[in-house]
Amino acid sequence: MSDAGFHARFAAVLRGGKDVARDGFVPEPGHAAALSVYRNTVVRGVIDVLGDNYPSVRFLAGDGNFAALAKSYWQAHPPHAGPMLLYGDGFADHLSHEAPRGMPAFLPAIARIDRAWGEAHHSADAPTLSPGDIRTLDADGFSGLFVDLHPSVRRPAHDRPILTTWTAARFQSRVERAGTQCEETVLVWRPAMEVRYRTLSATEIILLNALDDGLPLGEAAHVSGASPDLFIRLLKDGVFARDRHDRI
Image 1 (cartoon, one colour):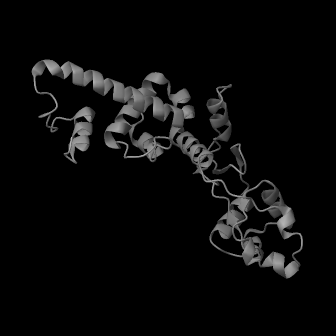
Image 2: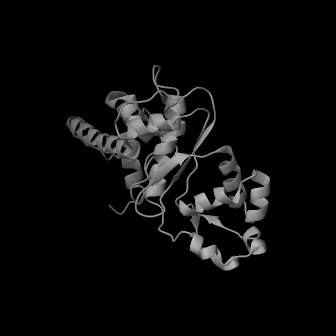
Image 3: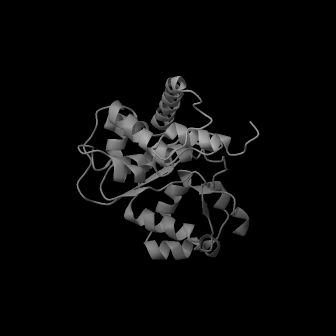
């Protein structure tokens, strides 16, 4: 079809709604069943895609509840042109408003870690800064070092310990209860071929925030109270990119 708006109108018809005109898509009453079959196929595909992108949410919500949540998300946020590998941006916020009664209150937090994992997995490859890259620095050079976080780094934060529950759900082992009210920030990143994840200490959070804001290492360490050993641990973990090494 040459009509540029055809696909947008057809997608609107599939999503349904009382105000959606079906003219041009259901020419005869008897063809409505065919449209329903097509709609069901599309919805099933969306459920599968979101299930792959948010496997921990799917596991904890159950297949039926997840299917309903995925369908309502698709109706409100249809995919745009492009790959579906990262479809579902904002799904965590959708869960905050649309999750039915009885669903765990921490489900949006679980979704944010699922999202962080997916983004880290599909992030651009980049070389990491290593201890060998900075071994020749003197004290002033070390203090004045500027570093960028690796492009895969994500730091979802929550109002309670949630990583153990997410890990159990993600890998379908024994599901741990989420901890009591206590903030937790999770570091998710992919320095090489495998996505890694762990909780961050309060000092690490402040240090990474300061470095991400563009402060040199000496100032960031002063603000956070981080020791050189803590920075070296992050360095060895592959949390930093080598892109700005020429600014040393």
